[in-house]
Length: 341
Ligand code: SF4
Ligand code: FES
Image (cartoon, rainbow, N blue to C red; front, side, top):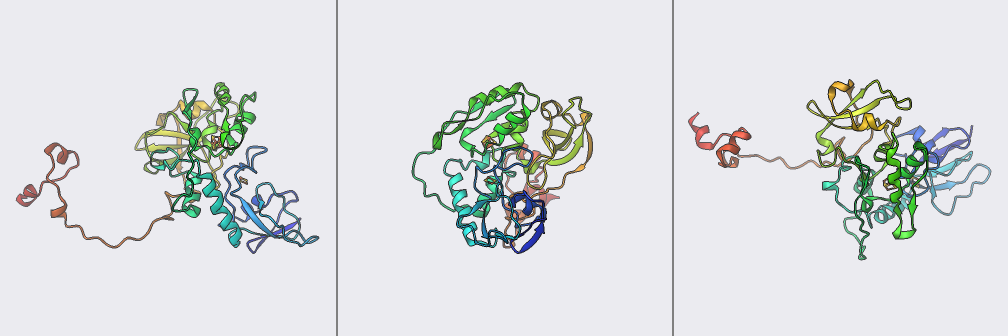
């Protein structure tokens, strides 16, 4: 089997494997990020450019380096190929540029976006984003589009990765949608709304790497980091759905149902709309246990937390008198009452 070396780590993989998938077989930090490639969607990849890598040696037969960076999601490996990802300054600089480019039109509305905390672009922004913008032109604006009564499209947040069009293409019976126009006028066609009568349209929400497609049954209900994800399943009658999901709970309330995702934020198997939207009752599910957070994000592993200086709080001084009803609600005791006790 052909051998490829990525950031100094060698692996033998089947001929035809892409650099990205070879890196995923090795795992760890050397795996390039991916915003448009999705292993479960045929034809995906090659759109976003965040996965570009440097090929410092083409192959054993032709050891010349490739002059330009290559998209790892659609470049097959060759025997003896040597690839640099995290060890290449060129790649790091390019990735900063791509993130800046993607953020030209993507609004920084993470504080109100449902995807915040599990958004691939937000994570990339933390790693590669610039502090300021150089962009002075007007940004694209769009009205929000309802895709049926359960999904809403925010075109302003879309990075045109095409994943949702592949879902509609590959999981629905007909192709009524796509990307209309070109350049900065490109947009996901409103004909995507024709996909709503399909039992699997909700999967567009899961594959969207940003918050452009949102679940209207969950919109603005909670931030994801306040919820506890649990592995759960139910006996689903749909022949193509295995009923295996993640339940996002707050106490005993089910706030959201999603497909199970792997460490690359890709769903393990697509779920039907009935499981996703119509079973928000804990009793409908068999809960298997808490879900592990597979991939780092801004909300886990303390990746972006800084140690702060120790602060001594003078509780007496910090207590506010406030209104009686407020004190009761938050169980605070007024300082005079506290002294009496
Ligand atoms: S709506 Fe989401 S999934 Fe669809 S193209 Fe835009 S970013 Fe990609
Ligand atoms: S993941 Fe390779 S170009 Fe988008």
